[in-house]
Image 1: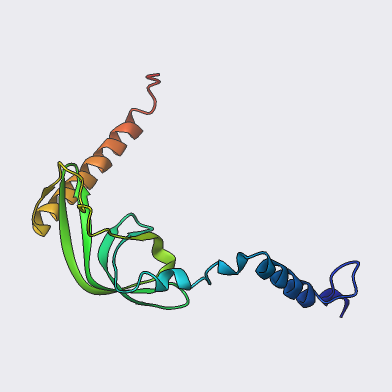
Image 2: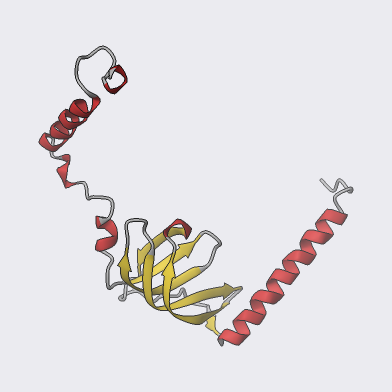
Length: 152
C-alpha cells in the first residue's frame, strides 16, 4: 500500500489529485475543454486534414470517436504540383486518428486557393505527381553518384 501513497504524506495520490483539481477549478481553469470537445466543435464543418504521409484531404466531418478516428463525407484529396492542383474525389472516408497531423476548418469566406494555382483534371494531376516523383528519384540518384565530388 505504501506505493499508492505520496512520499512524505499520509494521503493517497488520488486524494492529492482531487485536491489539485479542486484548486484548479477554484482558480477559474474549469473552462479548459475536455479532450474530445475540440473535435465536437468541428462537426458538420468543412475541414482541411493533413496526414502523416503529406496528403491533404478536404471534406465535411460527420463523426469521430475517442481515438480521433474521423468520418469525413464528400472527401477529396487535394494534390498540388508546382502551380497546378487537382482534387481527387474519394467520397466517404474513415481516417485513422493516428495518421492525422493537423486539421482545421476551411473558412467559406476566404478563397480555398492562393492566386496563381490552375486547376487540372484528376488524371492530369496524377500524371504530374508521378512525373515529379520520378524526377526527384533521378535527382537523388545523381546526387548519390556525385557524392564523391566535394563541390563545396
